[in-house]
Amino acid sequence: MADPWNRGHGAVDDMLDAENKRMAENLASKVSRLKSLAYDIDKDAEEQNAYLDGMDSNFLSATGLLTGSVKRFSTMVRSGRDNRKILCYVSVGLVVAFFLLYYLVSRMQN
Image: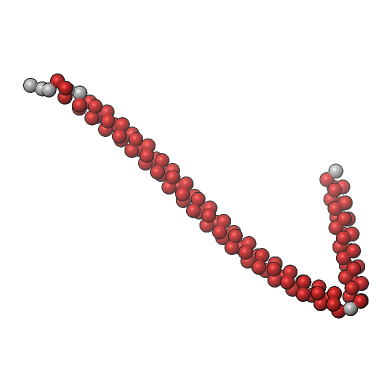
C-alpha cells in the first residue's frame, strides 16, 4: 500500500528541479554579464594606461624644452644691458599680442 504522505513528492521534485534550472540559467546570464563587464573594464584600463604613458613622455619632453629655455633665459639676463632691453621689448610685445588676440577673439564671439 502506498504511503499517503508521499504522494505529491514527484510533482514537488519536478517543480523544484524546474525552479533550480531557471535560477541556474539566471545565474549563468548574470555571470556572463559580469565577465563581459570585467573584460570591458580591463580593456579600458589598458587604454588609459597607454594614454598616460604617452602623456608621461610628452611631459618629459616638455620639461626638457622648458629647462633649456630657462637656461637660455638666465644666460640672456646675466649677459648685459643690451640683452635686457631686448628682453623687455619682447616681454611687452608678448603682453600686447595677448591682449590684442583676446580683444579680437571677444569681438568675433559677439
